[in-house]
Each structure stands twice: as C-alpha cells, then as structure tokens.
Image 1 (cartoon, rainbow, N blue to C red):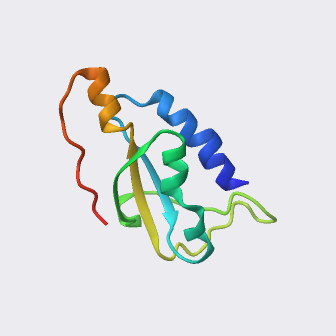
Image 2: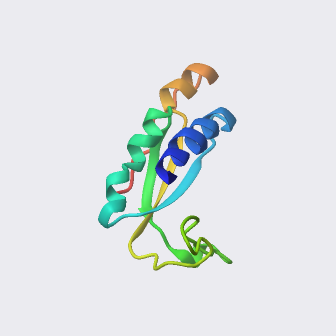
Image 3: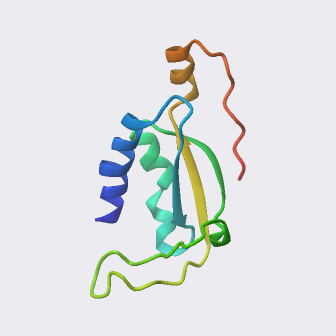
Amino acid sequence: MHKRLVKGFFFENAIKMLSAEGEVHVTHKDEGIYKTWNIEGLAFSAGLDLRKQEKFRISEYHGYKNKYGDGQHPDDAFNLGKCKKFKFGKPKLLVSQLTGSQDQPDREER
C-alpha cells in the first residue's frame, strides 16, 4: 500500500508541481525489506531523476517524528535504523530544453 502511494500519488503529483530547479526530498529506510522498494526506480518511473542521496540525519529536522502510518498502532514511532535522504528533480535535459539552460547535472553523492 505505502509503496503504491509513494509512486502513484506522491511522485506522480510532485513532478507536476516542481519548478525547473525544484526538488522532492524523500527519507526512506535503507535496510532489510525496505531496500526492495527501489525508491530511485519509483521516482524514475514517475519522470523524476535522482539528484543526490545522503545519510538521513534526524538532527537536521527539528520536531521530526516518525510513525507507522498503518496497522493496529499507526501513530506509534518505530526504530529508524539506517535511513537515506533522496533528492529528486525534473530531468536536467528536460529542464534545459524548457528553459534554454545548458547546465550539466550535478554529481550524485553515494
């Protein structure tokens, strides 16, 4: 269910609202079954390109609270474990065609 929401609702609507240089940030667990989600592939299939990925640091988000969002206790917090922050945007080639810019894509941090 959540995987379908990320692709079919979040990413597919985000690309319609992004400016040429805008970004969508997604935080996602990077261990166990969650690795099979293929967040990059979901974003790509919605027309977004990965601009950068980095380790998620909860200290950068004052007031951040995670929750399950589903099940018997949807508002309960869970152990974050190993997470990444993904930054997606419109493809640079498309942006340059639309704006006339010749900027090169940024290098990804892995």
